[in-house]
Length: 119
Image (cartoon, rainbow, N blue to C red; front, side):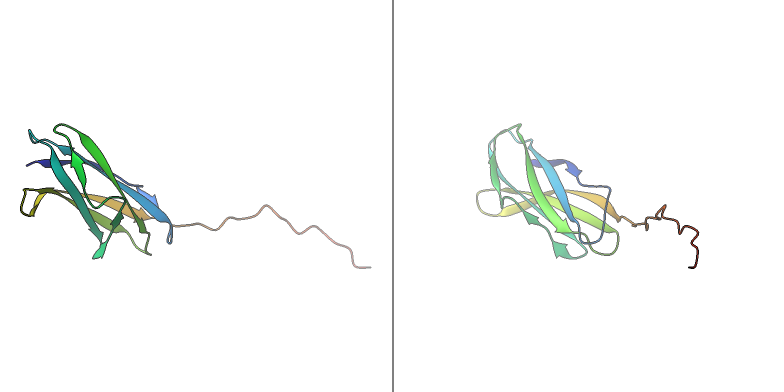
């Protein structure tokens, strides 16, 4: 293992249509500098990330920021880390994070219809 996923930071819940930010923290645990990439999906849909790949120093942790538009159901984000072995990308680590849909409850107003007199 060279590209260890340390954590996925994402909201625990989001409302339908909201943009949910997904930060995947990856540490280069090899003894050399490595090109590292992250891919992720939710419901068979790929996430867009801020960077395609980064050159990461040995021992350094970097954050790949991605985002998704929350659908009308709970989602599981699955992220993979990859490293470049000088000839191909090698899948290295895997982590998941659940995002629940926020159920919006209607707000009840304190407005009251006052008594009225008919004229």
